[in-house]
Image 1: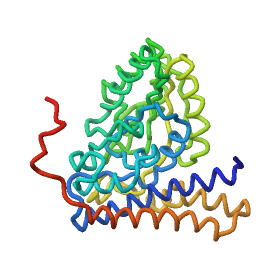
Image 2: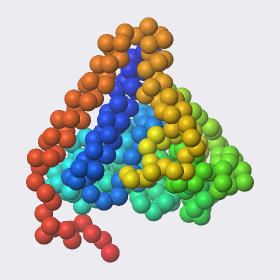
Image 3: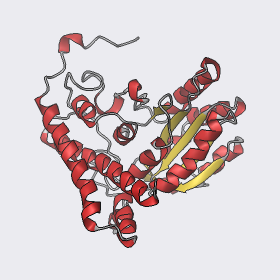
Length: 317
């Protein structure tokens, strides 16, 4: 596959996520979606890059900001949107909503509203992979703030001590919810913590899907070959609030404008234009994505609501 073809595929994949998140924002404001919602606008390149290196049996455990990871893993947008709207046709029958849905048939083992909780769960899946012969690699995704959760450090230490096939992906968007990460730690080099535990760690530009994929491919190969975990610190910026309704008063003046100019879709479009790709070809990627998501929204809105009499099904105490 040529670099240009790969770049166009990455662009369309990121557009699919971006447009889905824009529609989720609209639907949350207008009412069909209720509850807590966290969007990943500006961080799409990390999910697209990492998931492009995974195989069918691999498992992804994301944070509550997981719509993009589900899309990148192959979960259909219709199933995601219906789930967020509480419809019976959602991937979990409308039970999971924005923060808890999962689709294991696509290798997406769900979001988690407990900060950093996906890390020990992924390590458990990686431990099982050492014995079940599946060849599975587990990927756990968390933000920079989650690095201050004890469970994340314990999970990394266990993975290192037992050479488990797990990849730790830290989406460092510079804000631990509403607080700059630099105000939370003395050493803002988060990858250094993994290195202290004996885990190979790498920094990557999280706004470049090709660079993310190159790093992730090596990490996944190492895990699959039995040499243990890798830690990836991917630098990025979200260009929306931490949650819907976040007024973002904590941002310095002009920061959002600067971040928006450097976000992955805008940047990749400039790269493609500079390499001679026609504007019509670039615009077609957005048009295809927009048509797909628009159709999914319309179909999800027509779906029946979840059956409230079945709310106790699939609940384990």
